Length: 158
Image (cartoon, rainbow, N blue to C red):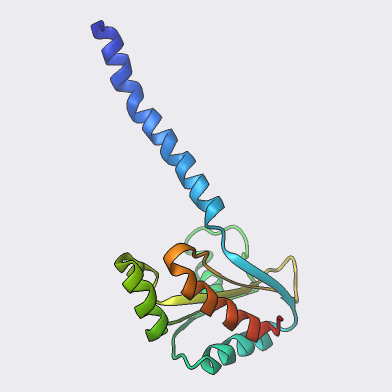
């Protein structure tokens, strides 16, 4: 190999690796798209239903984040150009039994705890509420089933 060919190859390698990382990120997003459900109603009624479904599952809510309020409050401070949500909340909670099960299967599943359910309404679709969770597979399937059952209870699916 000539010096110039070696030099060009060494210059192009970082770009090739960077592009493969972008492709991997896009593939990861497609594979790990969140699980969502659409419902109609008043946002606060759906928040109440999700909160009750978590509590009815015997779980303690660790956090109730009002993400939509925070984004609205800080929009101008961070140079935001539009209102993303009319309302957006995230509930976080954990289940000792499910966490034990998934972490015994793979100790790295710690990264997924606490579990969360999000819900939002956009200015473009008033009254249409999206409720969802992160996508889980493999050894996290018990957590996925728990979250699905909570959402099904809240939205009266089944």
